[in-house]
Image (cartoon, rainbow, N blue to C red; front, side, top):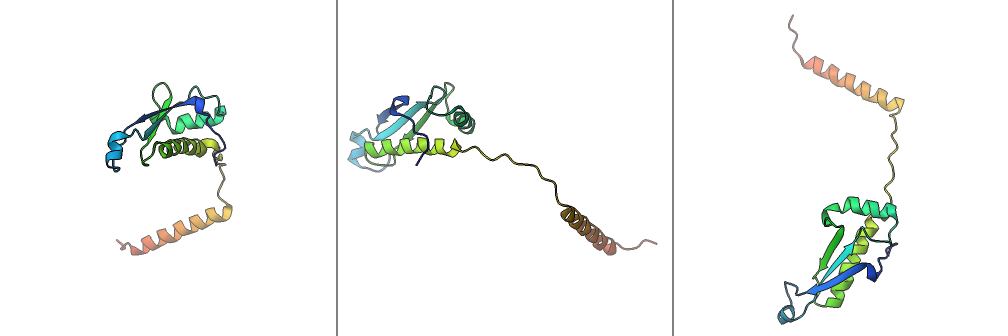
Length: 134
């Protein structure tokens, strides 16, 4: 379950006719759910999480900072609403935990010596393959 929940007053849902399978149902019912959420005006997310969200999903945001998601995989409007909200929460969950900062480490003395020894033996092998010119 997601740690952060976006309250319903922060996003707007709109509905339209979906495409694909469904027969006459597709032609009559507005079952496709589209969610519009202004990430820049969100007060629910902490600034650190919001900053990571904006960086990761900057290509999915409009110039005003509005994220638009849609779902038309189900035949009913209710299931598509749940699916599109779940997509939003999964996107937030993916950035909720800060990545670990990599600590630079030096190679151990034995690994350095092992690498140099390997280089020397490879060089010796190549030297033996060369024909002598004198």
